[in-house]
Length: 443
Ligand code: GLU
Image 1 (cartoon, rainbow, N blue to C red):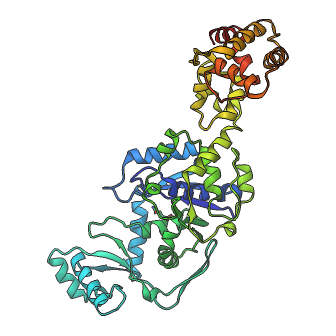
Image 2 (spheres, rainbow, N blue to C red; image 1 turned 45 degrees about the horizontal axis):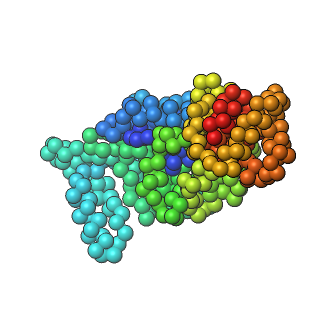
Image 3 (cartoon, rainbow, N blue to C red; image 1 turned 120 degrees about the vertical axis):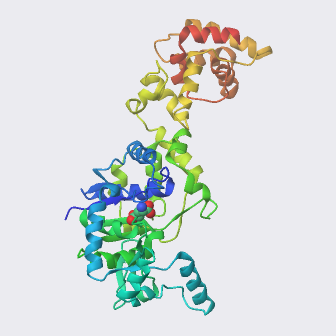
């Protein structure tokens, strides 16, 4: 059996951390099993769907390295939904209902007032043909409900949550189509899952109750339900479902210098029993990927942790992977010299500026000024083709008796204008003899 997964966002906004994680799990499950990963654009709601978000979703997935093998759009599939709908109406599994939303609200209030669960009472099923004809003659257009089969419990073995059981009699027959003919999410999704041969539906646990309803739809459609994996939700660092998480999108992460590899590495492991592995490669993450290792407790997403994973990944990125994003002229040697000091790639430009100059070093007085003068002299005569930093500091150590901080810090400050930074042994050859001499003489 070829595994087929799908990521099914509604194009009503950009991808945020929660749905990036869903996309990632679907992509990983397909990749780990030699399967296929589909992007399904859930754009049945024409009023809320926007073409710019369809484009953004594609771009974001590509940037994340989660490009789909194929893409389908629900808005291209209305004829299929209509055919399945007609068959289910004919079979009595879908029925028209005429209540207004005010009437339904009132029914719910009455039920709650009596201490009863607010389940739809199926009054529409009791209408006679004559009742319906009268309502329609009065211009009332029906909405449509899927009639749940109350005879047996709905059960499935969730790959994350384990055995699940729902009593359909405790659920309302879901509205699947509005009076204006537009589709709600539930039925088209089940039709697509059958039609596209989806083997695994991987999504957030906010869909668990929908799954119970959709399992009955799969049966009504004559399909076999796919396997389900409902991942626990993400919470913010404070442990609460945070608003920020719902809005933190690829655009903002990217603008903040977060690499796609960091997002993947962190989200692949958050909420699982495996430690986060800051690896730029997907292969090691795929190797251990298993829904059985997912916990049921909400997983904490911490932006600070993401920043740390990001830094550790940048420290491993080869020059070829970043060359087109570095300042003009910055070569592999310079990248390797500054890479261990970066939290974001953009900071490489700061160090390139330090290398190229001019640097803004604070004026030095007294002993340190004499020391820098001696350093300039020594620097003029060391062999620049072979480890000049070691040669320079060895000479200065012998000549002045300085060591440790007193030996190194004044040099670093004069040469870079900073107290901290990349290893001077790597940096000095990049600064080069002429610039180094000028900076030491100025000090
Ligand atoms: N469009 C639905 C959503 O974004 C898809 C849910 C599903 O995976 O079935 O919630």
